[in-house]
Picture 1 (tube, rainbow, N blue to C red):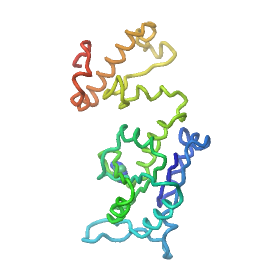
Picture 2: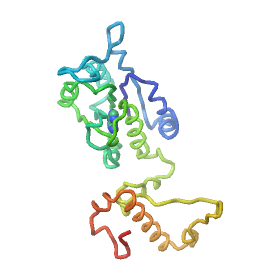
Picture 3: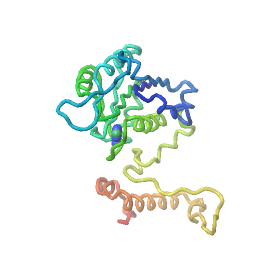
Picture 4: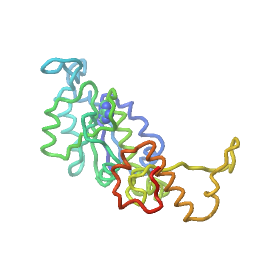
Length: 246
Ligand code: ADE
């Protein structure tokens, strides 16, 4: 998969050299290219923003550098990428979105700073590309770079061969399947007792049926406590007769 990121803070994307994404790059599974938006400016100050039409606080990112940057990046690869614009005004970025985007050969990210990018850029490229404005949560960050890191990690770990164990994402919270719509329950490892706290006995029982039941109960308990909205949204047919309202 190829990923391009156009930003005024290329150094903010340095974590893409580390850990899972860094290893996927080193193995040639991901081709990540980070571009400095200011290299497509022509004035002495490398200006990328200006005051908003209609007044109001803050600055808006100018369309010309974005247009020049996107034209060049789009022309540098085969076919058409999906263009992702992180914004708190976008649709929610969900696991479902991550799964869909992981199937794409090429993604271009356009993280904004200030009050956002001049709307005409989104309109212009929306006529040629699949443009997705996506939000990583109901809070406002100072820019779209941290959301890019979040989305790239969520997408990259779904690529074939990137996670050591392909089963690792099967039971993820939000993964489609048996535990769909439930959050993952707690996990334990050795030692069997730590500071007087034993590991729940059932997990050492070797009884797969009891372990699966316990995990489901814990997932239900955690979901009811932390995300009652997910339980409310569950298909009632997905509950079995042993599921209790917790
Ligand atoms: N830019 C600023 N806040 C954001 C958010 N919550 N999601 C995506 N992009 C953003």
